[in-house]
Image (tube, rainbow, N blue to C red; front, top):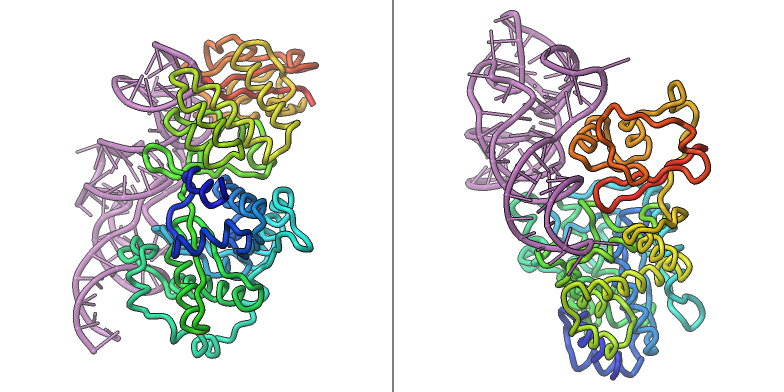
Length: 408
RNA sequence: GGGAGCGUUCCCGAGUGGCCAAAGGGGGCAGACUGUAAAUCUGUUGUCGACGACUUCGGUGGUUCGAAUCCACCCGCUCCCA
């Protein structure tokens, strides 16, 4: 099976400009394509990860990837699919984020001579002169068409600033620039980028009279249609400091039944034949598939060792036993004890398991807290500091959150 | 530039002088049920030395015994006209 067919079989492709053309080029390993990443935070997320896997799949088939870091476009902020304007980031933040992105990508994609390339659109966008730009490309954009673009739909009611309206032009300019200077004739990206991407092909056609292509990948959504890769509004990060390998593993270990196979197909590199065997699994047997999914992804992002540790820790915690070493841990200092004791509520807050004492109180009163496997009966419960020496104590919040506290 | 509106807690959205820490929904968290799933049901969801106190309704001042609610100015946004 060739790459393009595989992408289709994995359910990755959402929209394409010219299927035959793209299939031919990609299968022949002759495409030079780019994917843009706006650096709005200091770590990549699970969503970016999917784009990176796409890059890798195509690279393995001989195509040449360009990872574009959006140091310039981030200065504008993509309004696609958003209901409000993004927070404006400073130049320093953006540069910092770009550096973080770069580091994470290098772990995953091979860059260098004859391999993948990394570029930053700050290098050309920030140099642009307003009037020159307007004359050069402004004439090629129809405001009427732009306003009809799907990506602005949500903003037509709530308001769209001129700053954000220009995002499409910047992204289009990127493609135009890469087409001319890097021989890049394809752009890939998330399906929410479709209109922005078409802006680029349109610009290239008008300015240069040449064809360029776009391909978008299906966004990963759950059964409710919500974007996956977020927990309670927070992203699942690739940076182990922001989302620990254990939490990362747990996120995928906990996907809904209905989504496991889809996730395995779209995100892992397991051969399709092997995945199809899992398709017949049902009920609790799907838990095995979830473990495979979680392990595979953790392995790719954090390495085999971390993946094994996360898997073992999860098994120990949920199956009894007790490998305490891989749990998130908080070190307590003597100052946090009074008369050699610490109250449950203070303990929970100190470990970050509750945001406030009020929340800690509720948690205990609702029977959601156990310490060393014993349910904490009331909010006045105190623990002596001797308990925290050596291995420390294991605090369990709810059913799935484990935390260890030790004396520093 | 002229006119009409709007800004409430994590989000949406009620509230238009005291009964308001503020209805309802969503989301979150916890409990029951389970397979670390989904669905369902229940409780809970500003902070704290907690039958009380403190902080919050775009911002700053003001009126009042008392303001999310009234007034002034400011900031932001939407719509109509130019």
